[in-house]
Image (cartoon, rainbow, N blue to C red):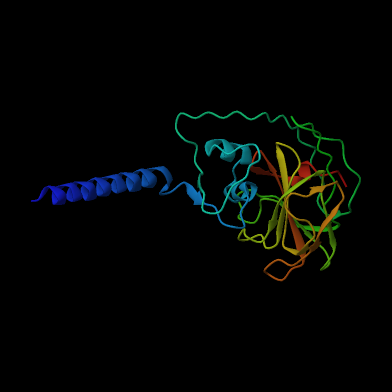
Length: 240
């Protein structure tokens, strides 16, 4: 073999080995179960909501900054990496349980203290509670409040809109509001969303119009997440 051909062959082989190394490394780092590829409509909060994770924990696992920004195509770990610890400052207290039945929007209740700020809760809308919290049921991670099509839906506390879209299966037109480092609330099956991601809202702000569940019933599905986990809203909303 001529010297020129030998050099060319060596370069091709070296390039092939390097390419294999890169592919294998990428496969080890971002392939298989326990990973999620970010889509255009996603936010870090909606992904954490979908998988029942604390958004701060998810950010920590993936070295995401305090702006919590992600981009389409990004691969996120959904499982805690080995030898990585995480401690969040969550000190929220719960509210007494409510009685079920007809609801009417009320003034804010006594705040539940958090590490960041107090959360003053109010009802998201008026109507009859038709489904209560049952975390072991697929559709029981919150409460359902029946009402009229187009009825106003209110923010249950001061906060920032961290998701407004229809990209989460089973929630229809969905709004998620961050109230503190500990608490998020969600409003599903909206006929119309009136707020956009990044907007700051005050307690009582009309954020959407009530829509219909896929089964045809007009209602609001409402959830509260504490540290990423579903909790019974009736333990936080004001007593009737």
